[in-house]
Length: 134
Image 1 (tube, rainbow, N blue to C red):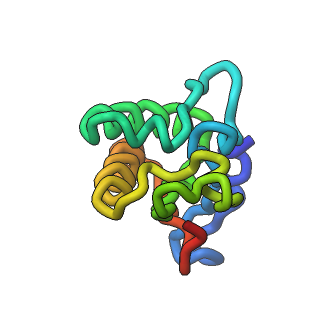
Image 2 (cartoon, rainbow, N blue to C red):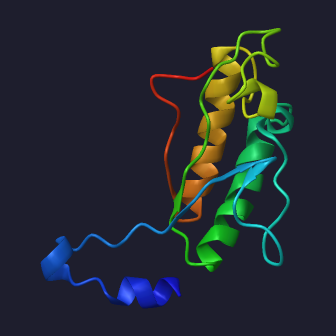
C-alpha cells in the first residue's frame, strides 16, 4: 500500500519531496507496528540500560523492519528527562516508561543511538517532545 501511495507523488506537485509514511515506534506500549516482521521493542527505560552501541545496532534492526514495511518516518525517540522519583506522577512519559533515563547525559546518548540506528536504515525521526513533557 505504501508503494501505491508513493506512486501518486509527482515531482511537479511536491518539488521532489516524497510522502512521509510514519509510525510511532518508540517501544514498550508505544509500538504501532507489531506482529510478523516486527521485533518487540523494549520500553525506553530498558533501552536506557543498554550500551549506546548495542542500542544503535538494535535501532538499526528496528529501522530495517520499518523500511521493509514501507515506512520512512518514525515518531521517536523521546528525549524527555523525567526527574528521579517522579515517574508515577509523570503520566505521559514516566508512568509509561518512555524515558531513557533521569539525566540529560543518558537521555542524550541513548536518543542519539536510536536516531543514528534509524538513519542507518533510511528512516527519518522526530525528536520529541518540545517544549517537553518530562
